[in-house]
Amino acid sequence: MIEKLAIIGVGLIGGSLARALRAAGAVGEIIGCGRAWPNLERALALGVIDHATDDPARAVSGADMVFVAVPLGVMAEVFNAIKDKLAPNAVVTDGGSVKTSVIKDAAAAFGTIPINLVPGHPVAGTEHSGVEASFAELYQGRRVILTPLPATQPRAIQLVERMWLACGAEVIQMAPECHDEILAATSHLPHVLAFSLVDMLTQMREHNEIFRYAAGGFRDFSRIASSNPIMWRDICMANRETLRVTLRKFTKNLEDLTAALDDPTGDILLQTFERAKAARDCYLDKIS
Amino acid sequence: MIEKLAIIGVGLIGGSLARALRAAGAVGEIIGCGRAWPNLERALALGVIDHATDDPARAVSGADMVFVAVPLGVMAEVFNAIKDKLAPNAVVTDGGSVKTSVIKDAAAAFGTIPINLVPGHPVAGTEHSGVEASFAELYQGRRVILTPLPATQPRAIQLVERMWLACGAEVIQMAPECHDEILAATSHLPHVLAFSLVDMLTQMREHNEIFRYAAGGFRDFSRIASSNPIMWRDICMANRETLRVTLRKFTKNLEDLTAALDDPTGDILLQTFERAKAARDCYLDKIS
Image (cartoon, one colour):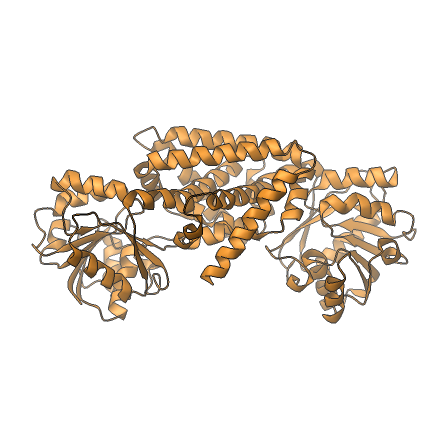
């Protein structure tokens, strides 16, 4: 049971955590902190949070659990704002999509990586943003990846794990670098591809008309291009070293497929498509 | 009213046309033709077709409307098989995703492009194949693009247009080359990207585990990678000249975005993502 939870950034991720913990009866008081007052007022009106403030230092005062769910570009600023106000036993965790950068930001702000900081990433979301888009079931059956460091307090890890289990999530642990490599491939790259494709279409001659000819497959494929641009710029910048390697690998594969168009048998295309279909059908089996 | 409709290839596209016309009371008798007997028997059992044959020449005998819905790689073979058996007034149309290649195949088979051939493309589909996946509502509110040539009989165009209107579709006309360029960008390229991404993931070290960490966005993004590999090899090969240009343009954009990771402001990424989000949100408005 969390007595006082401070959520810095009451959007889709932070708001959904609040709703889920409330629904599970796993939290006492919830303080929401953000910079956009209309969003905070909406969060209060919806009953997602009990109190609102725009000051991170005040938000964390007396909290036994702090969840930081802001764009990665603001993490350092938030850590700096809260570092001297945390209760001695307070556990801090976050929802950032890149883990090595959060750890680096924390080390810079705190002078060392706090032993009660448990870097985490709930692998869940929709293309919508803001507290209005949040819902209690967002994390049910989803995976939350924690990337604690060797010095991280076992007690802190356990408390964060319990928090996510109460939301219906499955919790796993891995090294931060491993997380960032996997997410670069399964999430960051797909977002860059979707944004890039839609942007290319807007530059075609017939761009006013072109979306009219898109079928259902395009609608699904491009859904993630409706995601928050600032959040995704921050993710790409925070994971840029790994994303660069992943992008280069993908570009190379695409060049190979382009060259394969010259082979009149089409065998390379067919083999690639067959491998992909088999893997995706198998993946669908696993998660359904 | 179509009296006798021959459908060569009773899969998702052909089967859905049959079901839709039947539901609309816009067709008399339906002859289904295919190479896989289990699928034809299923089509008969489901009442999608009235008669079945594996001989295209027999299927078109006496038909006033012929719909060819086979993979593009088999179009030439089908045209050759039916060319001497068509009734004098029979109208022929198809569901191929590339139009210049179908026209080329027809010209080669018939010696000239038949004036009663109306090349067409219902821009609809799912990632599933076979008559089992077909449904009467597939074309409702979707667009069918017809690409008639200057010599095409107006009567033939009108009959094909009426057929699709009866299925609830919107019918538009454009030049075959224009169709192939637009579809390369909105459909063929996204499929290649999705296949290529999923294939890349299968080659990563942790590939047995990696799909477990994929969020909902990946599920939607990669859905089209579960499409029929043979059909998509054929589409890519049939539209390879245009697809090559589109792929190179996309690859160039991707290289630019990769280079943009070096800019510490992240401005180029943000601008690209913002343009894409605005376009997609606007597109969603248009079709919802």
